[in-house]
Length: 138
Length: 138
DNA sequence: CACTACTTTAGAATCATTATAAATTCTTAA
DNA sequence: TTAAGAATTTATAATGATTCTAAAGTAGTG
Ligand SMILES: [Mn+2]
Ligand SMILES: [Mn+2]
Ligand SMILES: [Zn+2]
Ligand SMILES: [Zn+2]
Image (cartoon, rainbow over the protein chains, first blue to last red):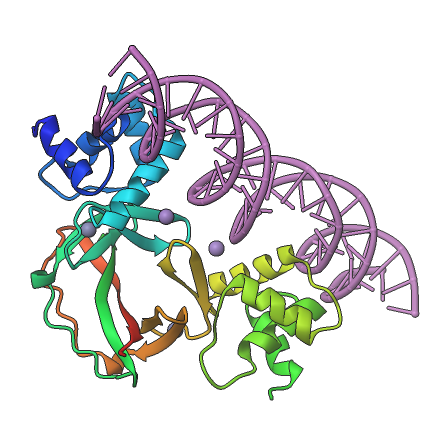
């Protein structure tokens, strides 16, 4: 249960004015212990439920993109029909539960060292991400 | 330079009738040595260039999705704004060249064994894919 | 308070993809 | 070979996500 000043500071520090709408979005995104994986649609729904005031979709998009640009969110592409944002901006991997369409974090230290044997001349590795698709064992 | 009967057989064996359009699409997709990574837009352009007869976009989508369903193509999601199809249907990984938006195959044997230490109870691993983003070293 | 720059908003525009339904083509059993 | 039925293609409309626009509202500053 952070208080608003944390969010206001977070917004200010990234060059965004702390408006009612943005503070509300911050509460939903960042007022929690665990990583939050969400689609824009998820988020819009939660705003509609948690908040008496309506927030336009354009504002949701604008704010999320600003946070992404500032490094407060990462975007994750799993498949063509769904894109997620992730409040965990560390370098990390994911499980994707195909039965429930749920993303689960896999921290860097939960995956053994990844050895990329093939090299591409003149190119440098920017990131290495693992996606593990899972489904019910039965 | 395969001859058409190869494609016709490929189509037939997967329950698709060998129409002019599908055979032409097969030529573009499968008449080559190396893996082909493409977007629907890429493919539609190539059809327009290589083929005197027009093929509707709906047919391109239908055929690609049928091939995907039959296991002749894989779909790869790199980021929200581009989805690729891949003629390499083996279990494999990718480099993504951020400078050129180009995908490069990384075969399974070009990546050391991947050790997923975290387990999810009641779930079975369906696939493990690595995406390595690269850019010019300069 | 008054001014300015930033922000929000509804609605329009765009773009990829999917759906529809009529016209065409393929298959196969006379 | 042909006729009938099934599958396919096609143009076009519909959908859905995202982005754009421009007008109305709000925050920061002095
Ligand atoms: Mn985006
Ligand atoms: Mn698709
Ligand atoms: Zn995550
Ligand atoms: Zn590939």
